[in-house]
Image 1 (cartoon, rainbow, N blue to C red):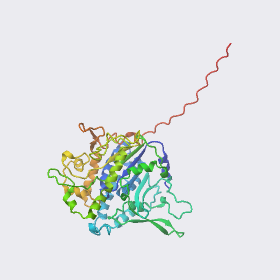
Image 2: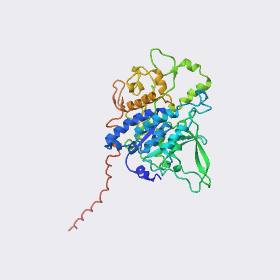
Image 3: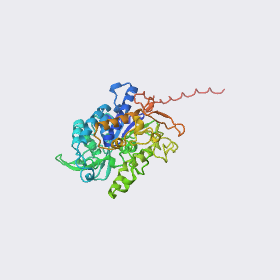
Image 4: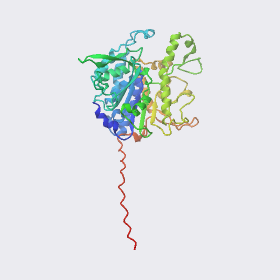
Length: 452
């Protein structure tokens, strides 16, 4: 009943967290980064093919597609196996929309059936307390009937892990992983909401339900900041120490997408839509355009906050105002954690304006605007586009990204995943630092001879 993880959660030493964004099919970009990380850590650990990311990270948390990846990794899957699942599953899930785009506010675009069957096949009847989970797991979903964001963790010391005495409620530890993952991935307008039983009558029949949508409609589509709060809030039972040498959060996105409208510049390629298109939009479409930027805005704010609590090796370029925050003072006297964000900019631009994390920079090629526009979607099913997303993630993991110590006049780059990154002091296979032993009590000084 998850007690097998208590020793790991309470073990002295640094802790490592993997935070995985939501983003539908673009989860393959995440998997490309993780494939590079897994290969690197497998070599560094000396474990070879036996290595799994669950052996390195003490907590893996995700939202939507990130919840699928997080759960499979916590079950000790290899990244390659998750990639194979995605290439089979995504075309099945998104094969045939039920309705055209304009009607998706009335009827979900896709049926839940294909994902339901896949989760049943691969997760079965495993519960949140399953001993098959070899590391910490956090799943983020939005409960719409109570208006609350849910964070479900497999820590037996979480205050809501077990049901209260005399309650007819189902213990959170008894929730099926398949239900929680599907709840986290039920993106509005794409899938119907998911109903999960939360109470039983005296006969054992379900007597109460909670209704969930994708955790991306909460502030937790990028779960990194929430995971920091989760492991430091006593209610969740982790109580992990903070500090640059004590806590690592490795945050991986599914592709940076910002919807923009601007006047066309014939001398510069851009992913922005023509401003004329915006002027022609109906009011409802303008409202939808604003709401589509919700996750982007929150994600940027969270990254900004986490970078003000740390000194990331490769700071994320926030905007033209604060840039990479290299001159921004910390919010705290000392760094709270070691934080690193990895994401690819799914937008086109002229070569002179591209950052190292632009998709064209990563792949070393110029892409057609229509191709990049397709990569920005959540319901991709074309195998060639899916492969392009995965290769973008792999390239991101191997890329020479701009280092924190760079200046505009003297840019410095280094490998995103390298021999010394993530920091070797976080390696769990390193010998534990010896515990300082208390010094033995000093011998009392010899008594002075009596004076004559």
